[in-house]
Amino acid sequence: DIVMTQSPDSLAVSLGGRATVDCRSSQTVFNSSNNKNYLAWYQQKPRQPPRLLISWASTRESGVPDRFSGSGSGTDFTLTISSLQAEDVAVYYCHQYHSLPQTFGQGTKVEIK
Amino acid sequence: EVQLVQSGAEVKKPGESLTISCQGSGYRFNNYWILWVRQMPGKGLEWMGRIDPIDSYINYSPSFQGHVTISADKSISTAYLHLSRLKASDTAIYYCARQWGDSEGWGVPDNWGQGTLVTVST
Image 1 (cartoon, rainbow over the protein chains, first blue to last red):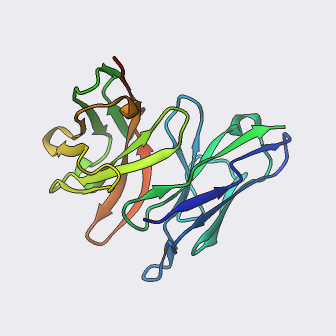
Image 2 (image 1 turned 135 degrees about the horizontal axis):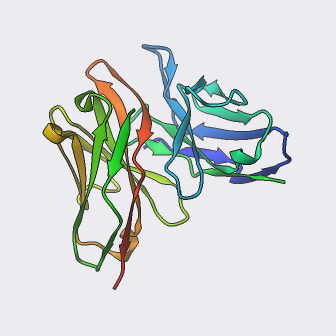
């Protein structure tokens, strides 16, 4: 199984500040046949299902504010929230869909400082 | 509008069984796999398995194989998760999600059901 490890487990950022969440996979999630990284980021707020923010490591989903961005390739990835808003308080998960079983990171809780 | 609607919350006793349903609408059900994901209280997301509704081909996570059964009825655009011999540790929210996939490749899990809370208690 591919193990996904996020860091940190939690972080507190001032309103308007920058939040960065890292995700490392134990094996590459890059597919050289189509040059795609099979890495997604989800946001989960209390009592809600996960919401897809970023697919293919860096493709923002429709309707997702542009303050959210994803980067990285191979085994190391980053989710950045450029200017944290109150509504961004949530737990963020990275997810690899390259290999079965698909796996998730343990989650990173983002709060307001 | 794409929707995945799951069956309602359940309260069960240890040793009992239950089946959760997930009905898709607003898209071609056969074109997307259905995944099942567990979230134990206060914990993260765990991928349990997935089914291709076209032929009911299933992959299970080794962590869940033998304890859960995934199935689908494409005629009513519905997938199912069956849990048997329930234990207190099965208390969790169970989510379904759809993921595009065929013989040529696959995409990202995008739309999720609202979740089904299962409580196992004496």
